Image (cartoon, rainbow, N blue to C red):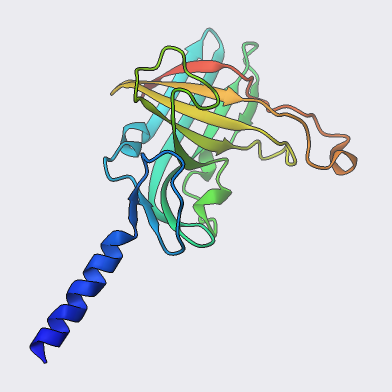
Length: 198
């Protein structure tokens, strides 16, 4: 009886371990119930408060990490966050920082969410990245401009106090008729921002 219990325990441990897939595998198939894990703690490098400043222009991002975020059929470690952008004229165009600890039903409701590790030759290409260097691509939303498509953000780790943040602007709106009166671009300009840890 002890041998049967030990065998069942061993099989369950092996099958659980077989479902853990390191995130740094490009184009990996994700079976139902799998866990895409940040096994090298790469995402941890981006956690914190980051700031870009150029004269009056400011861009502040707060990023946190959630382990085992549930997508429809699998789990994945992700980043989530909120941001604030002040234009060069000193006007605050958007500020969602107070929502960072809001109890949404899912972390994917945050204005920044997700984490796909991308290599230097994937969109958007990184010409000055090192061979084998990974960046993190996430969703980037503007809470008052729903319906934009193609928006996103790419985080690149430089060192413990510096990251580069590339904002990808909109390619249009999902349903033109329902969003005719709304602008078709994010309030944060599409650009690369060098940010320092606060």
